[in-house]
Length: 206
Image (cartoon, rainbow, N blue to C red; front, side):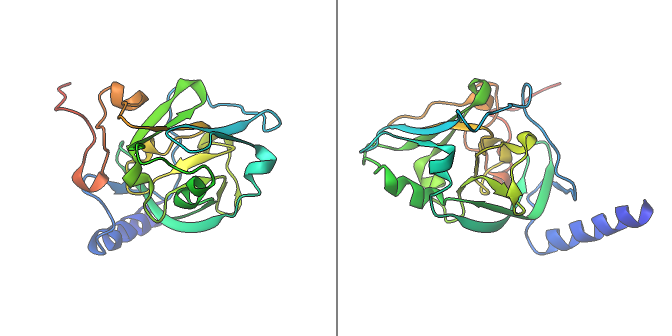
């Protein structure tokens, strides 16, 4: 137990020295499960991913169709607003910037709003979603996502706190205007950059 603790602290120190640990974060070697409400139990025989809004073609993919889209595997660090960071996580799925070529995005599209199970939404500027390592992920560490981590598909946006990476993805809306998502309406920061510690919209007192 002590050795495991010391190993974690040593790795955390190394990551901090390498400039990979954002302010206010601590390393975890586990993968904590945090979300609002129950774990979604999605049946892939009826699941579909739809794209709508400011696009040239509104499209819909079944699970089998979605898995035919070419994928990329990335290895990246992820950071949760609750204070943990996990390093060198491996995800597989279509790169978002490649995926949107299938539907064509209009110049009027400025924001992407991810719609997920239980009415959850997460909003980000289109520019942020076009980063090189943003995925529509369906695998983690070589295996299908578990329900707890967003099966069958989730967004993975490493440059933002992990609440911006929506689990149980159902629809992607391209919008000319920003609309705060579920956690943003609850007081979380609209942008969520971990390097700027953008956790909340305003100072909270407890």
